[in-house]
Length: 329
Ligand code: ASP
Image (tube, rainbow, N blue to C red; front, side, top):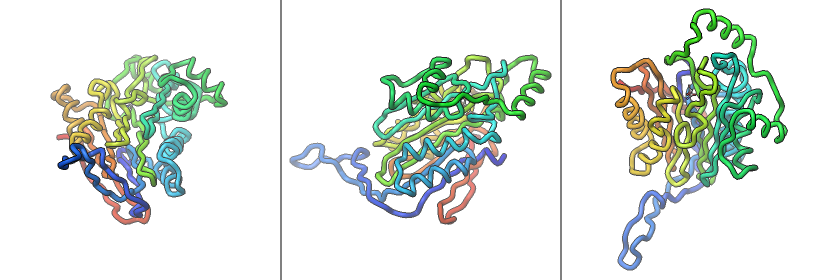
Protein backbone atom coordinates (compact mmCIF):
# COMPACT_ATOMS: atom_id res chain seq x y z
CA UNK A 1 0.00 0.00 0.00
CA UNK A 2 3.07 2.23 -0.20
CA UNK A 3 1.73 4.12 -3.22
CA UNK A 4 -1.53 4.84 -1.47
CA UNK A 5 -0.06 7.90 0.10
CA UNK A 6 -0.07 11.54 -0.62
CA UNK A 7 3.39 12.95 -0.34
CA UNK A 8 4.21 16.47 0.48
CA UNK A 9 7.66 17.97 0.25
CA UNK A 10 7.90 21.49 1.47
CA UNK A 11 10.37 24.03 2.76
CA UNK A 12 10.20 25.74 6.09
CA UNK A 13 12.09 28.65 4.61
CA UNK A 14 10.31 31.96 4.30
CA UNK A 15 11.32 33.78 1.15
CA UNK A 16 8.71 36.48 0.84
CA UNK A 17 5.28 37.72 1.73
CA UNK A 18 2.06 37.15 -0.17
CA UNK A 19 -0.85 39.47 0.27
CA UNK A 20 -4.02 37.46 0.37
CA UNK A 21 -6.19 40.46 -0.33
CA UNK A 22 -8.32 38.44 -2.73
CA UNK A 23 -9.53 36.36 0.17
CA UNK A 24 -10.82 39.17 2.32
CA UNK A 25 -11.98 42.73 2.09
CA UNK A 26 -13.24 45.31 4.57
CA UNK A 27 -15.23 48.50 4.42
CA UNK A 28 -13.75 51.82 5.51
CA UNK A 29 -15.57 55.13 5.79
CA UNK A 30 -14.44 56.64 2.49
CA UNK A 31 -13.31 53.55 0.64
CA UNK A 32 -16.16 51.06 0.51
CA UNK A 33 -14.09 48.10 -0.68
CA UNK A 34 -10.54 48.72 0.48
CA UNK A 35 -8.69 45.43 0.51
CA UNK A 36 -7.80 44.06 3.91
CA UNK A 37 -4.31 42.69 3.51
CA UNK A 38 -3.51 39.46 5.28
CA UNK A 39 0.23 39.03 5.08
CA UNK A 40 1.28 35.44 4.84
CA UNK A 41 4.87 34.32 4.41
CA UNK A 42 5.35 32.71 1.00
CA UNK A 43 6.36 29.15 1.49
CA UNK A 44 7.28 27.35 -1.70
CA UNK A 45 5.76 23.92 -1.54
CA UNK A 46 4.92 20.98 -3.71
CA UNK A 47 2.41 18.30 -3.01
CA UNK A 48 1.28 15.30 -5.01
CA UNK A 49 -1.13 12.43 -4.83
CA UNK A 50 0.16 9.09 -3.50
CA UNK A 51 3.70 8.33 -2.57
CA UNK A 52 5.44 9.61 -5.66
CA UNK A 53 8.40 10.98 -3.74
CA UNK A 54 10.76 11.11 -6.73
CA UNK A 55 8.27 13.43 -8.40
CA UNK A 56 8.03 15.81 -5.45
CA UNK A 57 11.82 15.73 -5.08
CA UNK A 58 12.15 16.86 -8.72
CA UNK A 59 9.48 19.53 -8.34
CA UNK A 60 11.20 20.74 -5.19
CA UNK A 61 14.52 20.98 -7.01
CA UNK A 62 12.86 23.31 -9.54
CA UNK A 63 11.19 25.44 -6.85
CA UNK A 64 14.28 25.56 -4.70
CA UNK A 65 16.36 26.91 -7.56
CA UNK A 66 13.84 29.72 -8.08
CA UNK A 67 11.82 28.04 -10.84
CA UNK A 68 8.14 28.64 -11.43
CA UNK A 69 5.39 26.44 -10.06
CA UNK A 70 4.43 25.65 -13.68
CA UNK A 71 7.88 24.24 -14.45
CA UNK A 72 7.92 22.46 -11.11
CA UNK A 73 4.67 20.56 -11.64
CA UNK A 74 5.50 19.68 -15.23
CA UNK A 75 8.96 18.38 -14.41
CA UNK A 76 7.70 16.69 -11.26
CA UNK A 77 5.04 14.59 -12.92
CA UNK A 78 7.34 13.83 -15.86
CA UNK A 79 9.38 11.71 -13.47
CA UNK A 80 6.43 9.37 -13.04
CA UNK A 81 5.54 9.43 -16.74
CA UNK A 82 9.03 8.15 -17.53
CA UNK A 83 9.17 5.61 -14.71
CA UNK A 84 8.23 2.25 -16.21
CA UNK A 85 7.80 0.71 -12.78
CA UNK A 86 4.85 3.05 -12.25
CA UNK A 87 2.12 1.18 -14.09
CA UNK A 88 -0.54 3.86 -13.79
CA UNK A 89 1.12 6.80 -15.53
CA UNK A 90 2.97 7.39 -18.81
CA UNK A 91 5.30 4.74 -20.24
CA UNK A 92 4.57 1.43 -18.57
CA UNK A 93 0.98 2.46 -17.81
CA UNK A 94 -1.52 -0.38 -18.10
CA UNK A 95 -3.42 -0.54 -21.39
CA UNK A 96 -7.12 -0.46 -22.18
CA UNK A 97 -8.95 -3.72 -22.76
CA UNK A 98 -7.80 -3.79 -26.37
CA UNK A 99 -4.16 -3.62 -25.30
CA UNK A 100 -3.53 0.04 -26.19
CA UNK A 101 -1.92 2.43 -23.71
CA UNK A 102 -3.87 5.68 -23.93
CA UNK A 103 -2.81 8.62 -21.78
CA UNK A 104 -4.66 11.63 -20.38
CA UNK A 105 -3.01 14.74 -18.90
CA UNK A 106 -3.51 18.40 -18.21
CA UNK A 107 -1.70 21.39 -16.79
CA UNK A 108 -2.90 24.75 -15.45
CA UNK A 109 -1.00 27.91 -14.59
CA UNK A 110 -1.39 30.89 -12.27
CA UNK A 111 -3.27 32.90 -14.90
CA UNK A 112 -5.88 30.24 -15.50
CA UNK A 113 -4.28 29.15 -18.75
CA UNK A 114 -4.59 25.44 -19.30
CA UNK A 115 -3.86 22.68 -21.76
CA UNK A 116 -4.94 19.08 -22.01
CA UNK A 117 -4.54 15.94 -24.07
CA UNK A 118 -6.89 12.99 -24.04
CA UNK A 119 -6.52 9.49 -25.46
CA UNK A 120 -2.91 10.15 -26.45
CA UNK A 121 -0.85 7.15 -27.61
CA UNK A 122 2.86 6.51 -28.19
CA UNK A 123 4.12 9.59 -26.33
CA UNK A 124 5.91 9.28 -22.98
CA UNK A 125 5.16 12.78 -21.70
CA UNK A 126 1.53 13.76 -22.23
CA UNK A 127 1.85 16.56 -19.66
CA UNK A 128 4.41 18.29 -21.87
CA UNK A 129 2.16 17.91 -24.89
CA UNK A 130 -0.64 19.44 -22.78
CA UNK A 131 1.66 22.35 -22.00
CA UNK A 132 2.35 22.79 -25.71
CA UNK A 133 -1.40 22.80 -26.38
CA UNK A 134 -1.67 25.56 -23.77
CA UNK A 135 1.23 27.60 -25.08
CA UNK A 136 1.26 26.94 -28.82
CA UNK A 137 -2.41 26.72 -29.81
CA UNK A 138 -5.56 28.78 -29.20
CA UNK A 139 -7.19 25.61 -27.77
CA UNK A 140 -7.33 23.75 -24.48
CA UNK A 141 -7.93 20.10 -25.38
CA UNK A 142 -6.51 17.98 -28.20
CA UNK A 143 -7.59 14.36 -28.59
CA UNK A 144 -6.43 11.03 -29.94
CA UNK A 145 -4.57 10.64 -33.22
CA UNK A 146 -4.65 14.38 -33.92
CA UNK A 147 -3.10 15.09 -30.53
CA UNK A 148 -0.41 12.53 -31.36
CA UNK A 149 0.23 14.20 -34.73
CA UNK A 150 0.46 17.56 -32.96
CA UNK A 151 2.99 16.06 -30.55
CA UNK A 152 5.22 14.86 -33.40
CA UNK A 153 5.00 18.31 -34.99
CA UNK A 154 6.20 19.72 -31.67
CA UNK A 155 9.21 17.40 -31.70
CA UNK A 156 8.05 14.57 -29.44
CA UNK A 157 9.27 11.08 -30.32
CA UNK A 158 7.14 8.01 -30.96
CA UNK A 159 7.63 5.27 -28.39
CA UNK A 160 6.02 1.96 -27.51
CA UNK A 161 4.44 2.53 -24.10
CA UNK A 162 3.80 -1.13 -23.30
CA UNK A 163 6.51 -2.84 -21.29
CA UNK A 164 7.25 -6.51 -20.87
CA UNK A 165 5.47 -6.38 -17.52
CA UNK A 166 2.30 -4.63 -18.70
CA UNK A 167 2.15 -6.79 -21.84
CA UNK A 168 2.33 -9.90 -19.70
CA UNK A 169 -0.28 -8.62 -17.22
CA UNK A 170 -2.58 -7.77 -20.08
CA UNK A 171 -2.20 -11.29 -21.44
CA UNK A 172 -3.19 -12.66 -18.03
CA UNK A 173 -6.11 -10.27 -17.81
CA UNK A 174 -7.41 -11.46 -21.17
CA UNK A 175 -7.41 -15.04 -19.88
CA UNK A 176 -9.47 -14.31 -16.78
CA UNK A 177 -11.53 -11.18 -17.33
CA UNK A 178 -14.03 -12.23 -19.99
CA UNK A 179 -13.11 -8.87 -21.55
CA UNK A 180 -15.06 -7.10 -18.80
CA UNK A 181 -13.85 -3.76 -17.43
CA UNK A 182 -14.32 -3.70 -13.68
CA UNK A 183 -14.21 -0.80 -11.30
CA UNK A 184 -12.20 -1.56 -8.20
CA UNK A 185 -9.99 0.24 -5.74
CA UNK A 186 -6.69 -1.00 -7.10
CA UNK A 187 -6.39 -0.62 -10.84
CA UNK A 188 -5.54 3.05 -11.04
CA UNK A 189 -3.32 5.70 -9.39
CA UNK A 190 -2.93 9.06 -11.05
CA UNK A 191 -0.33 11.64 -10.20
CA UNK A 192 -1.86 15.04 -9.53
CA UNK A 193 0.59 17.68 -8.39
CA UNK A 194 0.22 21.22 -7.05
CA UNK A 195 2.95 23.72 -6.28
CA UNK A 196 3.50 27.23 -5.00
CA UNK A 197 6.65 29.03 -6.06
CA UNK A 198 8.69 31.80 -4.45
CA UNK A 199 6.34 34.43 -5.90
CA UNK A 200 3.37 32.74 -4.25
CA UNK A 201 1.98 31.57 -7.61
CA UNK A 202 0.14 28.28 -7.86
CA UNK A 203 0.16 25.77 -10.74
CA UNK A 204 -0.97 22.19 -11.13
CA UNK A 205 -0.63 19.16 -13.37
CA UNK A 206 -2.33 15.81 -13.60
CA UNK A 207 -1.34 12.79 -15.71
CA UNK A 208 -2.47 9.18 -15.95
CA UNK A 209 -2.87 6.08 -18.06
CA UNK A 210 -6.36 5.93 -16.59
CA UNK A 211 -8.26 2.97 -15.36
CA UNK A 212 -6.56 -0.29 -16.32
CA UNK A 213 -8.36 -2.33 -18.99
CA UNK A 214 -10.87 0.44 -19.59
CA UNK A 215 -13.21 0.30 -22.55
CA UNK A 216 -11.31 1.59 -25.59
CA UNK A 217 -11.92 5.29 -26.09
CA UNK A 218 -12.65 6.00 -22.43
CA UNK A 219 -11.36 9.29 -21.05
CA UNK A 220 -11.30 9.89 -17.30
CA UNK A 221 -11.28 12.98 -15.10
CA UNK A 222 -7.54 13.57 -15.11
CA UNK A 223 -7.33 15.70 -18.29
CA UNK A 224 -10.60 17.51 -17.60
CA UNK A 225 -10.03 20.96 -16.17
CA UNK A 226 -12.30 21.35 -13.14
CA UNK A 227 -12.57 17.60 -12.59
CA UNK A 228 -9.07 16.12 -12.27
CA UNK A 229 -7.38 19.46 -11.72
CA UNK A 230 -8.22 23.06 -11.01
CA UNK A 231 -6.13 26.07 -10.01
CA UNK A 232 -7.26 29.54 -9.05
CA UNK A 233 -4.25 31.61 -8.10
CA UNK A 234 -6.34 33.79 -5.76
CA UNK A 235 -7.62 30.82 -3.79
CA UNK A 236 -5.71 27.57 -4.27
CA UNK A 237 -5.65 24.39 -6.27
CA UNK A 238 -7.03 20.87 -6.15
CA UNK A 239 -6.47 17.60 -7.94
CA UNK A 240 -8.03 14.16 -7.90
CA UNK A 241 -7.21 10.51 -8.22
CA UNK A 242 -9.45 7.48 -8.37
CA UNK A 243 -12.47 6.57 -10.44
CA UNK A 244 -12.68 9.45 -12.85
CA UNK A 245 -16.35 8.99 -13.67
CA UNK A 246 -17.26 9.92 -10.09
CA UNK A 247 -14.93 12.92 -10.05
CA UNK A 248 -16.39 14.21 -13.30
CA UNK A 249 -19.94 13.87 -11.97
CA UNK A 250 -19.03 16.19 -9.12
CA UNK A 251 -16.64 18.47 -11.03
CA UNK A 252 -14.48 17.59 -8.06
CA UNK A 253 -11.42 19.83 -8.23
CA UNK A 254 -13.40 22.93 -9.14
CA UNK A 255 -15.81 22.18 -6.30
CA UNK A 256 -12.95 21.97 -3.82
CA UNK A 257 -11.39 25.25 -4.92
CA UNK A 258 -14.78 26.94 -4.70
CA UNK A 259 -15.31 25.53 -1.21
CA UNK A 260 -11.94 26.98 -0.20
CA UNK A 261 -12.98 30.31 -1.70
CA UNK A 262 -15.98 30.23 0.61
CA UNK A 263 -13.70 29.82 3.60
CA UNK A 264 -13.09 26.10 4.03
CA UNK A 265 -9.59 24.85 4.72
CA UNK A 266 -8.09 22.49 2.12
CA UNK A 267 -8.78 19.56 4.44
CA UNK A 268 -12.41 20.54 5.00
CA UNK A 269 -12.92 21.13 1.28
CA UNK A 270 -11.48 17.73 0.34
CA UNK A 271 -13.69 16.02 2.92
CA UNK A 272 -16.75 17.79 1.60
CA UNK A 273 -15.81 16.82 -1.96
CA UNK A 274 -15.60 13.14 -1.02
CA UNK A 275 -18.87 13.38 0.91
CA UNK A 276 -20.65 14.82 -2.12
CA UNK A 277 -19.47 11.85 -4.17
CA UNK A 278 -20.44 9.32 -1.53
CA UNK A 279 -23.88 10.86 -1.26
CA UNK A 280 -24.43 9.87 -4.86
CA UNK A 281 -23.06 6.38 -4.19
CA UNK A 282 -24.69 5.36 -0.96
CA UNK A 283 -23.53 1.99 0.32
CA UNK A 284 -20.74 1.63 -2.22
CA UNK A 285 -17.21 0.99 -1.03
CA UNK A 286 -15.84 -0.66 -4.13
CA UNK A 287 -14.13 2.34 -5.62
CA UNK A 288 -11.46 4.81 -4.70
CA UNK A 289 -11.47 8.60 -4.84
CA UNK A 290 -8.79 10.83 -3.39
CA UNK A 291 -8.68 14.60 -3.39
CA UNK A 292 -5.70 16.77 -2.63
CA UNK A 293 -5.81 20.54 -2.18
CA UNK A 294 -3.62 23.49 -1.37
CA UNK A 295 -4.62 27.05 -0.54
CA UNK A 296 -2.89 30.34 -1.21
CA UNK A 297 -1.25 30.23 2.22
CA UNK A 298 0.34 26.87 1.43
CA UNK A 299 -1.92 24.87 3.74
CA UNK A 300 -2.74 21.45 2.34
CA UNK A 301 -5.35 18.78 2.85
CA UNK A 302 -6.14 15.37 1.46
CA UNK A 303 -9.04 13.01 1.83
CA UNK A 304 -9.99 9.66 0.41
CA UNK A 305 -12.90 7.24 0.25
CA UNK A 306 -11.03 4.10 1.06
CA UNK A 307 -10.17 3.08 4.64
CA UNK A 308 -6.48 2.50 5.15
CA UNK A 309 -5.52 5.47 3.08
CA UNK A 310 -2.66 7.43 4.52
CA UNK A 311 -0.82 10.39 3.33
CA UNK A 312 2.62 11.29 4.41
CA UNK A 313 4.00 14.72 4.67
CA UNK A 314 7.51 15.88 5.23
CA UNK A 315 9.70 18.88 4.75
CA UNK A 316 12.96 19.23 2.92
CA UNK A 317 15.13 19.19 6.03
CA UNK A 318 13.52 16.07 7.45
CA UNK A 319 11.43 17.79 10.11
CA UNK A 320 7.77 17.18 10.48
CA UNK A 321 7.69 13.68 9.00
CA UNK A 322 4.41 12.07 9.81
CA UNK A 323 1.77 9.80 8.44
CA UNK A 324 -1.85 10.73 8.84
CA UNK A 325 -4.72 8.33 8.30
CA UNK A 326 -7.57 10.20 6.73
CA UNK A 327 -10.46 8.50 4.98
CA UNK A 328 -14.18 8.47 4.56
CA UNK A 329 -16.17 6.32 7.04
N1 ASP B 1 -8.57 9.29 -12.25
C1 ASP B 1 -8.00 8.39 -13.20
C2 ASP B 1 -9.02 8.03 -14.22
O1 ASP B 1 -10.17 7.84 -13.88
C3 ASP B 1 -7.44 7.16 -12.62
C4 ASP B 1 -6.84 7.23 -11.26
O2 ASP B 1 -6.62 8.25 -10.71
O3 ASP B 1 -6.54 6.24 -10.69
O4 ASP B 1 -8.64 7.86 -15.34
